[in-house]
Length: 100
Image (cartoon, rainbow, N blue to C red; front, side, top):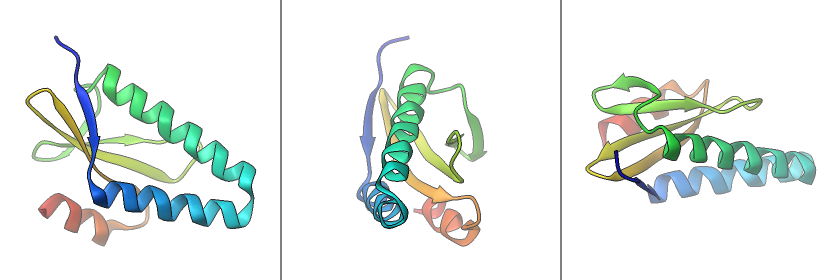
């Protein structure tokens, strides 16, 4: 299996930005921990793109360690497309992301 490239949709970038601002307001150290957990998650997805649960059709989910967020992504050809980073309680938003 070849190497996959990873791309974040604008929606995912907006999610990450919003989450970082939230944690930064609480404590900048917490923001740093979130960013590290996110990067570890993205690295895991890149290393094993088919290793995570399919949640709907071809959309997959990785649950972040120590934070109540999941990374939702899909694989098209050799590209991993990160759709969103969503809090576990935001089911309505999940439905909208998957529908897009």
